[in-house]
Image (tube, rainbow, N blue to C red):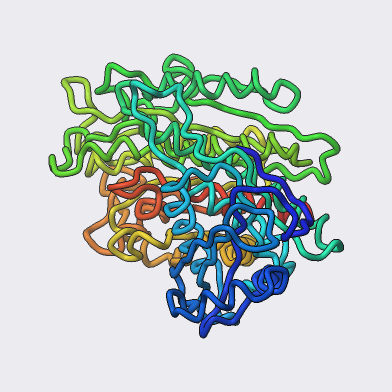
Length: 496
């Protein structure tokens, strides 16, 4: 499928379909009005029948339009003209794809550039959002027996831009959208794989493939079990010791051309390719979804792909913390005390609070790179789902600058986050009589105490923790690919 930015003569372009918008009470958009005038009021005459009013989600397909070269005109309702936003645009793009998939249409022109979604640099965000939303609507989990096949419904999609002075911004938006979409799709694809295929070693193999695909930008180092032991990563090792699938930590260094500053941005992804809970085993209901406990690593993997496609002038250290948490005779136990790579000790109260044990050693390992910014991404706590549901990710930081930057990126991408506190009062819940910390607090404020645990190992950094337990996947549709776009936008904003 190919996207093209173009300034078209809508009446003369040869295509299977032109898609235009109308608003409440059949108010025409500029594109719809132009086609109506070219066809001597043909569209107006049909709308008099009342089959469409312009409300959100309404559609009407027109055929054999006089003096129009396109085979069809597809009219889409957008509701109130001044109330259009990215949420509405996403819903409409999904509806468009569902309708067009039921037809023989292979090529179409989408003429929405006159819309306003109330964001600075409107044409950039409009084109980028439409592209990503159309791709999202087309994404489908591949069955294992046809993993090599691609679901191609359309050949060419032209995004029509009415104003010539907006073509440059539109082309930039498309370039960014295609790279970010590749990152999102790659994250989804690897995240949706079954855990008997995507284990920690498989994750490390995919990391090494990035170095082959982007040899000028990416260098990969794999830390296996023996190296972890030598490094003193005892917390990380303990989590994986009950599984036959040994842990692998993939360290991916991305270096862009003409790096704009000496900043090093580190991305850490929790990569529990399956989390049974260990001896503190999870309930059987929906345990199959614990293959998604590697969503943080999948997101980091996707961000690095997008950065490589765009050749961002940044230095990024990405770590995929691959591991599997299983019960067995060699599993770590509630009551064990672990000495982390930092030298701090942790009393294990719950083996299902394993992600923070993997991440705490990863955060310590990162010190050798002296990063300026560290962002860890993890499906860390069910408590975050209880607090914020499945639409908003938990956000924690020790930096007001990073808080502002992520809030900005969140609003731009409509990937919602909500900042939760790191007050010292919460640290009291992590006290232990025989270790520096326990790995689990009491039943209160679980997402916050988990973040506070990590903060004890991130005090040397400007640090962000994203708890994506509620937003990383949906039970019916699989991985969401979040927060790939959010983090990509944060990185893009660092270039300004």
